[in-house]
Image (cartoon, rainbow, N blue to C red; front, side, top):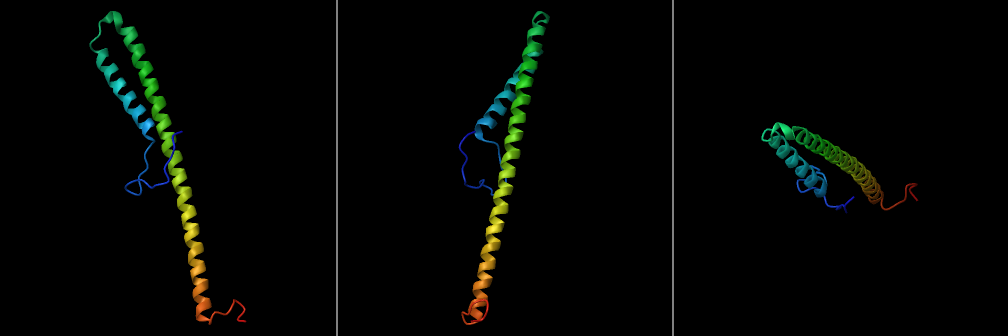
Length: 114
């Protein structure tokens, strides 16, 4: 898989598939559209080869779509994991801040008041 950046998505919330998968998906879609268009233009003698080409392209497009879907699902799961880790760290920071504040209010004494 391609190198992934640790930077968040530009809008902060939406995730997209890696660019090579998006390009592959677009290419498959363009080929599928071209094949469907060609099916109406060919002679009856060529219909079997055209139909075979359409089937092949549709299969490839389906495969690419599945790969993109898997990549998006994985990215979403990773984002959720990171979000959970961030929330955990924020909770720990808040707990430490509360502890520090309590110690300051108690004149700097430890938790046992010594």
